Image (cartoon, rainbow, N blue to C red; front, side, top):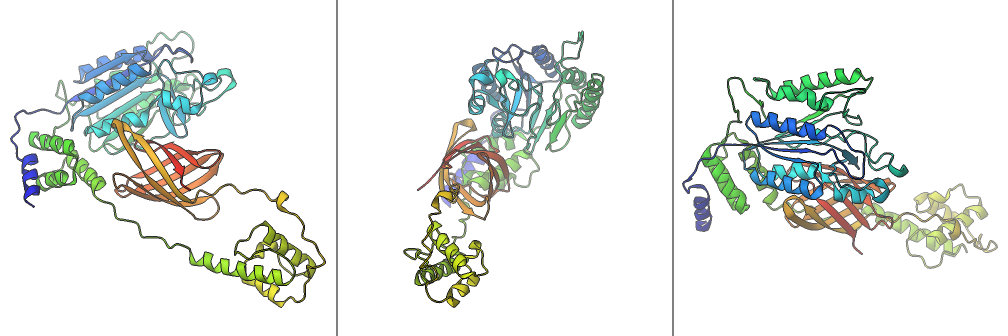
Length: 514
């Protein structure tokens, strides 16, 4: 108890030496000159214009043009390094983007053409939008705004006759709390880079509509986006084209780029003491530290308090799941019926070999002969039921003695290996975090499985996995803090390796044990 009180005092009651107001930090990327996929005309100009508009309303902007993967990553790292808890983060990207398996990727200028790359390669060489979002969330930023003008035609759609990703547009996104995301076109739509004919406007249809509204005084974010959407749709329809920007709103409260009566607006900052305390707690990242923070600030209405509660829930030990029985009663009863039926088939001369309680090809073949020789009103699928055993018990003699067994193994189609069992996984997450753990699959029949997954941080999730065929698994999980994790994973041809990216941007590989 003494150590706990000392730590709480050290964290929360050291006097702050400086006062730091919440800041507005922006990242703007514009890519036109792609080396291996179709070039664009207006993305660089879009980035320059947006940078200027953001600077005019108080943003510290990191801008990069025609950036390869390394340059984009350096710009993102610079941007992330500037963010502090309580700040407002703004991300704008103009260029090519692509959707692969429900995830969105921003393409650097040195991305390979489809003829030279697989989907896995494109994923690894691109910038995952969810990765960027997760890294911003990890800084404790109060507000995150993302404007993505990357819904132009899929650059891989017709390259060398191959297609990677969806035909056009980006996938829907699950925005975390405190986030507002805008795509320049709706799901499955193409955003116009330019109008047909002599389009003298230097900016794309979306950006030219957005720009004047960023500096409009007293215009709340949602009203601004509503106006942009209607104007973009109207302009696109003049080209007989459908484009209606999509947005995903999980923002708390209102936001103004330029509030009425102010010159360089900023969101209301948390108190200096609360911000300083949160920064110390975040650096320690322990249960005791977050509990001490909440003892002092728990009644304060502030997003940093909400973040602290969420992180405390993740750090606290998860309740162990109830142990499952070694075998299900229904399975034990069925195995007993199969075993009794096998013994009876052997006694009737319909030889199954050693009675082992498993309905294999030889056992089913013997049961098929029994039906054929006795005229029993049964189907082969009845084997292992009480009805089938009753028929076997009523039979007499050796009806199968004169009927030699037929080899039927050759016509049996092999069943795909079940996913049921224990899997071990490793994951690489944003902020250089490494995680590992296990996932247990239990068959629910057909192609569906119940799953329980635990990692080295004592996080626990439960849910289902559906084998959708074609090497795709639909994963639906709920973590102990209530976060929903829905994504599509890849299953290898031998059905012993699973790869994917979860909602937090963690790239994982799981391998079946045993």
